[in-house]
Length: 182
Image (cartoon, rainbow, N blue to C red; front, side, top):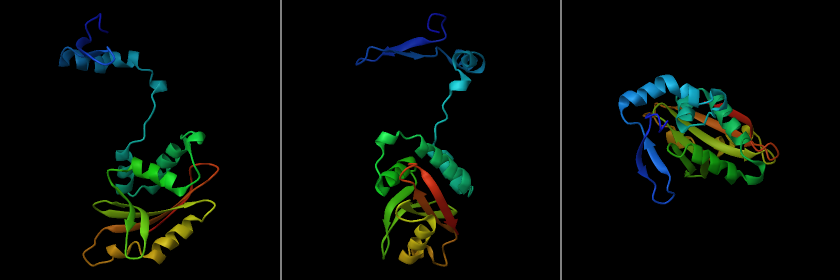
């Protein structure tokens, strides 16, 4: 592409010595994107990356099933030897996926919720459990018992409040159960 003029040298990385390439102008750039790129990119090998925006879009649309399908698939792709068997491991990954929008270990008067995502029209309160330490129903019960949603129980709060119990399996190393209560 360089030899044919589709790319020019913008500079050289001083550390690696690699050439930094660019399109010479917008006409060449858009021509490449519109006609030649398919010849250089194997569409069968494209990897679909999980994005925070997709996850948040699912929550905004109240599409919980797609939200958990995406996250479950993501967790399933984490190599087994990088995992430990503690809830904090899974909570940290959940946090990293949603860092821009999430509060973790959100303190209340009676305890701390594992994670809370506050959106313009919804609030999602998450409680996590390991499969050897409880069920999704147990997690929802903990949200209720500990009163994690109480701070949203006021007349001026118009957002929907969702209580979400999530169970991670020690052997499968992914989400195996979730329950959502409004």
